Image 1: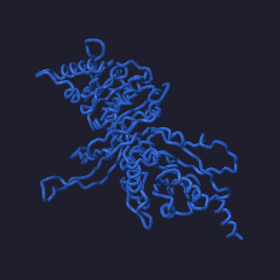
Image 2: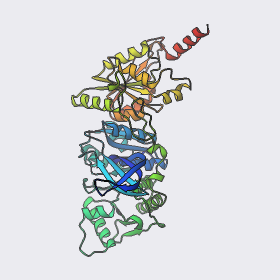
Image 3: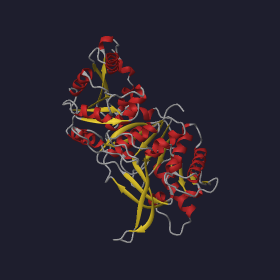
Length: 489
């Protein structure tokens, strides 16, 4: 493959709540689910991107993320799964799908997030990565990404094969897509069936109708456990049966099919070969236990972005406040701040680090950073992250104490703690206009921004990375060493 596989579409936060039912509600004849476990994962386009990344491909996800806890959660899960997120702004709330399950069966699905908002404009870097793609999968969940005019223009101009996974509430595919992958129910909504027509006749008629309407190279209608029906230039459709029995949880099977077809096309396969590979992948996915068994643990693990003192045994994100200055610490505080500043057309500035034993050098960097915009968000490595970077004896101060000290500074507007060695996931959610690093100009190091990994991340949404002067001679490690020597004396 000459470039990344780009997945473009609407990302949702999916949550499975597992439990047991032993009684009915006393005030209504409905079952009571006693929760025993819960897990979050990316849904929609995010799930397709995770599937593709799990196959070892370089995967870029172009999607919109909201300024809320759900958006932060998605940023972490996607980064942990190895997906490079190129985020657009998303007004409103993160869409969520919550499945209540007992004994492997779904009792109820609860959707929340409200109506979809119009995604923001893509950056030049987003348009560049679409041009460089080896294949593009449009995973449309009817929430606006597939309608974005600049993105549609970029998709129409790319030379890469485009796979379009449509949604009845979404727009028509761009003319000339290589492959569209609707399921049976979507075909019936998009192309009304003739009365009394058989299942295969309905699927074939719908596929041919969509192929002509969208001027698509081919349309593959997925038939659940019976495989897929492929209509292309010939008048006779190709039926691709499943290689074996495929009974089980089908949630995500369509995303697995579309992702597998996209990967095959990126590697040079014919459309018929890509559909056969996709049927085999989706069938094995369902037979193997579905989404719970197929996702890498990192894509459904415990939340990594959180407020201090939020370590719990479940997977829910805590946005509670803490002590003095606590109202400015955590995801909820940052989300509120982002909404206010962006609504006023302001500039969001962020910086990050361990901040173990805050000293004058830190203060100088923070004060300089705050002058560059209308708010300053400080991203702080958690205790576990600091220990991984600096050794088991660090940090000296706990993440709770470090966040309190930072939040108490007049130049700091909000604090966010993250567990990873780098703040990539946090940055993909916050999308600061400016990322600030402290630099020791006394060393004459030249253009340090070229070596900063954050600079590449910031370019995904058109942000900038800058270095501000760092007070010479200030170092947390040196302070600890000097303190240790004094105690020995």
